[in-house]
Length: 112
Image 1 (cartoon, rainbow, N blue to C red):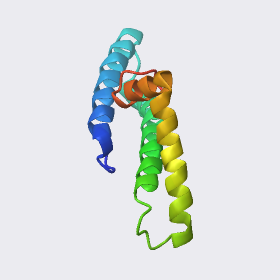
Image 2: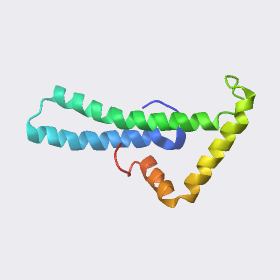
Image 3: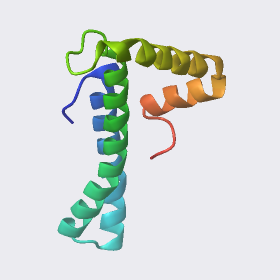
């Protein structure tokens, strides 16, 4: 995976890929599945999770790189900063959400 190295998600996704690959190889071997078919299914499965994680990282990266962004009008810096602070404070105050996001980021939460 190649994207912004925010919070080590490339490593986490890579480890999830290996875990999924091993589990699905065992399943494919037990079911007599052809390697070609197996790899297509595995690729589709992993694409869902990696796309969701990469999209989330892109959103976070965008929220935290607003200041001085030449593509945005200066008038948007304050509202975006306010929304970012509101969201971060909300996550911080909701322990269940904070812990769930931490588990998801660490690759131990429920699969997407």
